[in-house]
Length: 172
Image 1 (cartoon, rainbow, N blue to C red):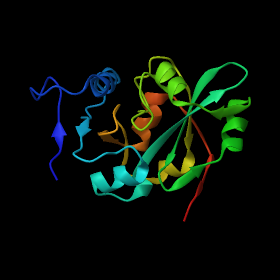
Image 2: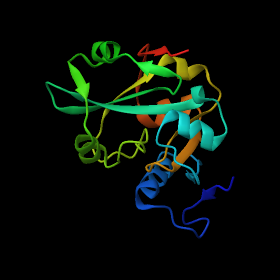
Image 3: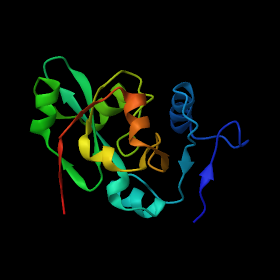
């Protein structure tokens, strides 16, 4: 498997959306590099396969739409879990619904399948599932359906300012 790490330091440009994430990581003081994979990382299963890790180590990002305030809500949980919308609603304090592709792109600046936990065009309310905190390292989307990057749960909390809560249930 060949993995492309790009950016100014390597002399190889990243796709624009991935570069925005790399810039956000740098601005947050994290020395993490976006990796462009030869296979799609659009879903948790695809990302785990491309990276060569357990699906539980994928930090999947699901964007919801808060109904009353029409603001984006980013729920982040293990790829081995299902996000419980009622639990997210309880944390956010208002009704939520799934966001469609146009809403996700307009509010985050990223397409579904590549939504990272940081670098959004508009601040989102971020809720992180507690189970992610037990892992030594996780992998998140890097702005495109082929881009990923590793980070620790502590780094995820730091760069998102997210609220930790029990918002997911294991699928198996």
